Image 1 (cartoon, rainbow, N blue to C red):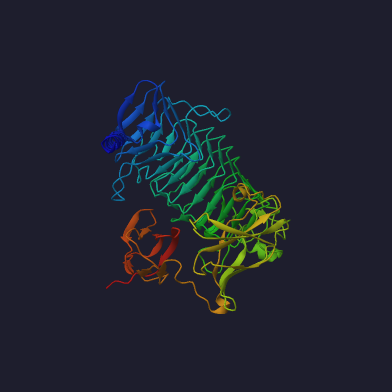
Image 2: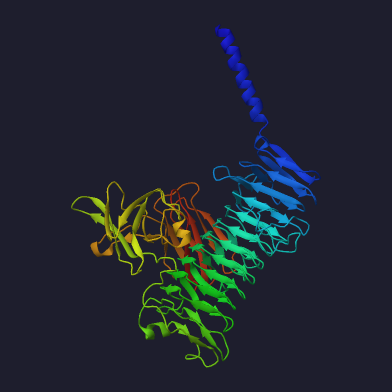
Amino acid sequence: MHLYARSIFLCLCLLCCAVAAHTQTVVGGTLSSNTTWTLTGSPYIVQDDVTVSEGVSLTIEAGVEVRFKKGRSLMVKGLLRAIGTSDKYIQFTPDTIADPDDFWWSGIYFSSTATPFNFNNQQGCLVKYCRFRYAGLPNLVIDPTGQTAFTLSAYHSLGVLYCIIEHSACGIAASNGSQVTNNKFLFNTSDLLSGPLVKVGQNSAIANNLFYQNAIAAPSGMLSVEKNVKVFNNLLIGNGFIDFYPSLIFKDSCLFYNNTVVDNVLLSMEVKGALIYNNTICRNQAGMQTFELLTCKPTLYANNLLANPTLLPGTETELLAASGSDTASAPLNFWGSADSAFVAARITDHDDNPSLCKVQFIPFASTPDTLAPIIPPLNVRKGINWSNGKTYVAWDPNTDADLNGYIVYYDNFTGYSFSQKIMAGKVTYVELSGVNALSDIAVTAYDHLADGSNDQYEGHESWFTLAVADSTVGYSDKATHAQIFPNPSNGWITVEAPMYSPDSRIEVYDLSGNCIIRELLTAPCRIHLPHSGIYLARVYLPAAPVTLTKIVVLSPYVH
């Protein structure tokens, strides 16, 4: 009996080994008949470029992993349907991740014969619930459609829904009638010679997306949209724009509304004939100005525009008018004050330079616009109540007329989400039991329409305001994140972290968007930047969100 049982056990082990040995499929070349990549055949190793012939379909099932050898790509001349689910994403990734400069795959290209995406019935080429990592090629690598190498590049319309594009070079380039909705764009880089992160043609929609911690140096910005494109319900958070190129480019007849634009570095929005309304744009480090009008045609109304200091210390130029003799329209915006002189000081127009057009900003709002996303709480601070040992969080009250309360978040901060929260009501002071004051804690505000579903995208809940140490009680949380000092510097900076791991590293990008320094952080280190200018540092630490920091080098010191 024992021998029989052992025999069965041995057979099961051999069966498991046989199954394990069959869990990959090597692919390459031309698909000349309809093909399905199934979960049982996953992962698929793209050894050579794969081409889907004209009139042929490739269907990829939910949960499938597609691994590309270095530089390999997928060319679609027919139809691609890659549709995962919320719990079974389709993975598009390098076959191996070793040297960060030496494993990129080239992306997915949709040629002129590929089946266009149909906005109305969701037919045609569609990627949904897919995750793309380390895709696209930087520095003017030309793809078969004649564009620089995006992660997804389409000659016609394309549907990209509920996807994650991260650690890639560029993002999406597609033509008229495309839909880019409910996606996350995380930690991507577009350099000086690459295209924007998202570029779409006329009559397209960019909605309900999160753009977080992307480093952009492309002349065409992070978003570049043609006529009649709707851009709404997006979160543009913590992105770094390295050069003095525009961050967002909006052309004639575009609609940009109900977006939250917060905590970006060197933000500058270039507008030509677009309609910009009901957005909350605050707490950004602007370049020379937040908005630059290329013509006198654009209309900016009913936005919340405040706390966006420029590079020049002590200045806040929210709006730079275009040259001309016409009048640009910018009424009903909330500029952070009810004082007209305060508002006028934030606009550079004909009154400051006779060659510029006049900006008509009166009437303006004296309180935040309630149709725009609710404003993040201000002056959020944390400390320890020494009488009971509990961590406290306090903040200034919002002035939004539709405020319905606040939420305090803590534990497992990813940079854009937490695992725990407390509904605080309308109080502005909360004590937390069992929460370390050195951990990341944040507060949001929400309005009367918040229902717990997609509230931040819809503007019914603000973006997070991270709590800082309450300096009034002498408390310090210096050990929470990496420290880069001095900043500004003479070219030598020191990087210290509260903790280190084999994966801790710092990346420094120059004005062209090139990664000029990549070093492991196994201990405090000194870094030399030999040229004056502005740089962006991206720091990766264990159990901490990735951070982007602007570094200013004034006059480099030479030994």
